[in-house]
Every structure is written in C-alpha cells, then in structure tokens.
Length: 119
Image (cartoon, rainbow, N blue to C red; front, side):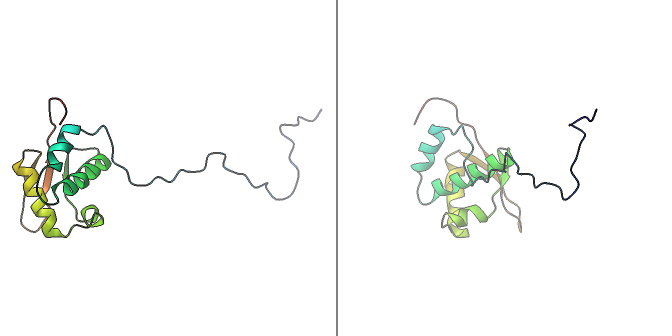
C-alpha cells in the first residue's frame, strides 16, 4: 500500500505562504518610564525634555542606561547639536544624567534612576 504522506506529485513545488509574516515595528520608547524623571526634565529650560526623550529611546534600544548620545534621534526631534548639548547640560545639572565627555567623540551618558513617588 502507498503511504499518502510520502507520495509526491511530479512538477514544480507548490508556493508556500508564511502564516506568520514578519511584523514591522516603528521606533518606540521602551517602558516603564519614570514619571518623576520625565516631570523633572519637563520643567528644565530649553530642549532638555527632548534630549531626555532621545536618551531614553537610545537607552531602551541598547538595553543599557549608559549610552552614547548620537545626533540621529535628537535631530529627528528638531534639535541641532548646540541645543542637544545645552539640553544635556541642563539634565546633568538637574541630576537626571551623568555625562562623560571626551574631545572628538559623542558624550557617554548614563540615565540616573530616580527614586521616590510621582512628579
């Protein structure tokens, strides 16, 4: 007797359709986000909040609190490099980040975890 599981018709292979096509995801902020951190950053002058959001985005993608501040994501938020550095200084002065600067390279930034309640 012929086993139907082993029987194959001659000719081209049937086209297979992937039942689970890859999902394309956009860029997103990885949570949980510390509300008190965001509130403190929002009260800072200039574009500190936008710089902080860019840092949180990069940190979430890298899965690390210490990241290099590249210009790509802040520029997407409409920040030139001077505004980025002013915002970074404001975040550093407020104690929300620590920064290690070296001439000729992007600053290395560590996002400081806040403790305590809401904003």
